[in-house]
Amino acid sequence: MASVAKEARPALEKIRATIRAVAPQAAEKIGYGMPMFYYLGPLVAFASFKDHSSFFPMSVRVMEAHKDELKKYSKSKGTIRFPIDHPLPSALVRKLVKARIAENEAKVKAKARRK
Image 1 (tube, rainbow, N blue to C red):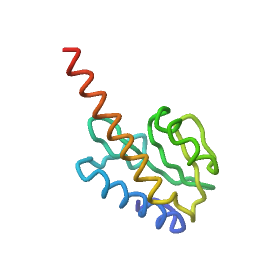
Image 2: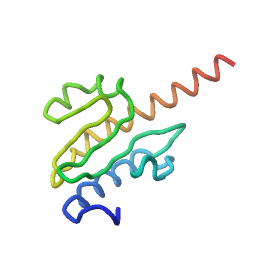
Image 3: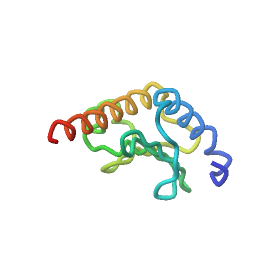
Image 4: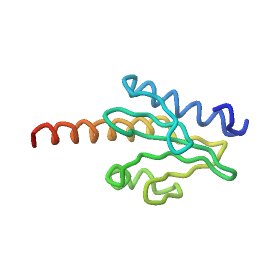
């Protein structure tokens, strides 16, 4: 967070705090040069760039499941972009993180059943 522009820091700190509240069991690491959370594999990530900030749910399925709530944001395959000074709503971040936790837990259970 120290390398993030001053204007972007409050939004990213809010996202980070929301993720930590929803997924206290997740480990925080740096991956792909950005803050990432891991729980049974990659969970979510976020970053700030020159003209925007991004939230990475790391799942096309999760983004598709929440497509109505994400309509007003610029998106690509695995990225939700938002203005530097206007974070994603905490309620939306909570939903996305919970969905990713469920997805990762389901993957682990499915893998265990195959063994």
